[in-house]
Image (cartoon, rainbow, N blue to C red):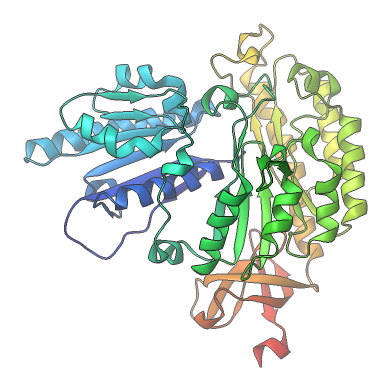
Length: 466
C-alpha cells in the first residue's frame, strides 16, 4: 500500500478515567489497525484524547516503507520522552507504545534508542495490548515482535455503534494481510509476514455489522488484496471477486472499493467483476513501480511493461469508464536515464487519474539495499520532480474532464462552509456542493460544475434537491 497518511482520532466528550491517543502513519491498513486498537483499549476503560498532551497512553502506529517515515517516528519519540519526564515530575504517568511495521522490524533498536518506550508490538500481535500493558505496568520494557500462531482477528472486539458512526459512512475492512511476492525494495514480507486471507464468513460478518451501524461504503484492504483466497463455508477457496459478489448483496451497501493490488493477481474474474458488479467503483489502484523491463526484473516484479499495458487494455475493455491510479519508484539501483524514460513513456501511454510516486529508499534487509549501484540523491530528486509534474498534469486533466458530467457522490460530511456538504465521486475525488447535513450517508447524483486544484464543485440535480 502506498502513500503516507496521518490519522488522529477525534476526541470523545470529556470523561473520567484513562485516555488514549493513537497516531497512525502510513497505509490504509494502519488506519484500520489503529481503529481496532482503539476499540480494544476502549474495553480497558480508555477514552479518546485530542492530543498526546491530554493522554495517559500514547500509541504510535508506525510505517517502515521509507526511511523518512522511520526517522519521523524517532523524532516524535524524542518529544514524547520529554513529555513523559515532565508528567513523571508532576506525579503523573504516561505510557508509550510503538506498534506497527517499524516495531516489527526494529523492536530492539527502538528500545535501544528510546528507553521511554514501554511496549513495542508488531502488527500481528496488537490484540495482546492489554496483556502487554499490564506487564509494562510492573516496570518491564516489553517487546512483542513475533508472528503468533493465533488469528488476531478472532481476539479483536467489534467497534461500538457510537465509534462506527463517529468514523463516518466510509470504512476500511481488512480481508488479507502479508505478501509472498518479495519485491526487492519492500519490507512487507518481513514485517507483515506471509499472505493470510480471512475466512469469507468473518469478513461478511464484520461488513454486515458496519453496514448496520450506518456505513455505506466499504474499502477492502490488504497488502496484496487481490491475492485474497479466503475459505468459504463449504471449505473451498473464494477469490476476491467471489468475496465482493457476496458483499454486494448485503443491504445498505452503496459502494465497494479494494486496494492495494498486484498486476500478477489481477485474475479474469476480478476484471469481470468491474463489469458485472454495480456496487464496485470504477476505480482501480494498480501499482506498476517502473516502466522499464530491466528495472522491473531487478525489483522482482515478475511482469513486464507490456504485460501491464495489456492488462490495462483488458480492464478498460471490461469497464471503459474506469479510472486508474498507480505507484512509482524512481531511482531504484541501476536505473539509467533510458529506464526512467521508459517509466515516463508508460505513464503517457496509460493516463492516470492519480498516483503516488517516491524516491527509492533503501530498507535494511531487502535485496535492493545491498546493491552497489545506488543512484545519487540529486538524480533521484530530479527524476521524481519530472515524474510528479507529468502525473499532476494527468490528474488535473482527468478532473477537468469530469466537468459537465453527473457523478454519483456519496455524501460523507458537512462542508467547510455553511450550507455545504462534501463527499467522494466514484473516482475518489473530493467534491462539495450545497446541501444540508441530512444528506450525509446518501448517494446522490451531482453535476460537476468546476474543478479546483484538489477538489470538484458541483450542484445537486434538481430532482434530488426537490
